[in-house]
Image: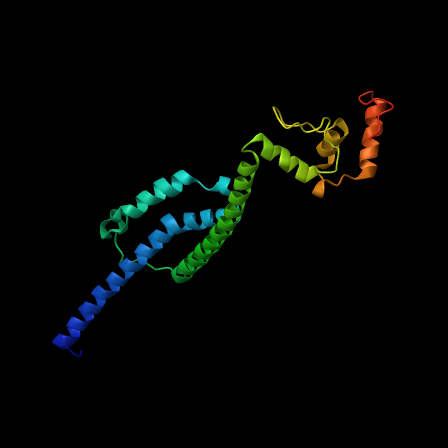
Length: 207
């Protein structure tokens, strides 16, 4: 049997140590994937699809945060013997998949930010309309001008919001508010007839 030289023996021992260190690092990534990334990916999927009710905030901000901040979860003591550890060959692809989920989440976040900016503009517009009675009157006249869909004329001093005439209210309840306040005459005529037949409108009522 050929005797190993001293330098060769050192190289073998060093390679063994490096192999164990490599397995230790790989196992840390494996544990991180199992304990944290899998749950994060599920949450990011719910986020992307708008299923916010399925995201457990306590798990994200509590349980997972505690796992990450506690380095002992990834210590050699907790990971145990790594000599027999058979690392997952798919670990790279697991992390690659997680990166795609993060990108999807960021893209959804940007989309939601744009929607929120649009909603803020609408809220600001509503605040502007509702700031005083004159603004409300002006908006109603601009929005529905030329259409007598309100039971009474819009007074300059509004104490309550004007109510729709009965037939228009029934129309909105059944079909929603029409785009551009253009009511379907056929549907409206049918509703007026119903209200007349039921006595809720006078027989001689004219639209």
